[in-house]
Length: 281
Image (cartoon, rainbow, N blue to C red):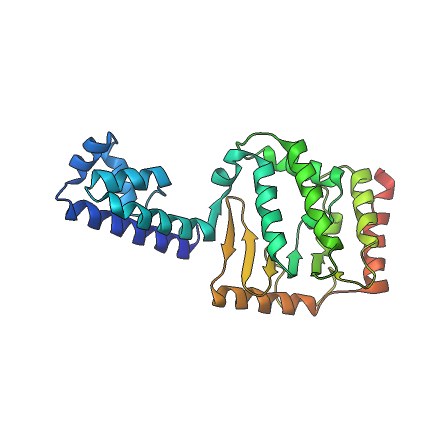
């Protein structure tokens, strides 16, 4: 869990404690009033559990200050804007996540990204996307709306035709060789990327294995208009808009970009990956 997220949750818990004590209630009394276990009250006040919006509205009413519900929910929204657990995001299925990213894409005019383990979603074929989403669904308890999610992801790619926007993708060579799908599907995916190597508003660079890295490859991330970074872990996706966080990721991207291959050199790296599939196709 992110340290910044935890600090924000502890701060929210402290505010809940203030409201309860201002209302003259003990933790047990508030728990009884809300028909909750006392442990839930304790966990929320100590930043050990993330409340829902309904929890916060109930707390405000139970503490005798219903007017505070707007403030509390606003704090929660700010917290969730930064830290979005997959458990919560996927409660509505995979398609909902794709639609959230499409909405952000519509707001973004310049996107720079780095992907160390998978082909970027905006460059994926339908078969590759289907294989990736299916494999992720094996570890997440969520509605398996894979086909709807694939269609939504393919729909997001329309944004690449908008010449008023720029996209600069950096892809670690390992992502060209990783097999979250069958070899024929990966071969078709690599062919798709070859078609994006030319000049234009969509630029693709390959960071090769043999590069003397300016920074370690690290995790994948995307920088949107120099004001937002989206990155993820196994358990959550972070949307970071703090200027220092954005600047840090921008520096990392610039360092990685200096190691990238373009044009004919990038084509050769793709062909090496493509040829490695031949014995198994």
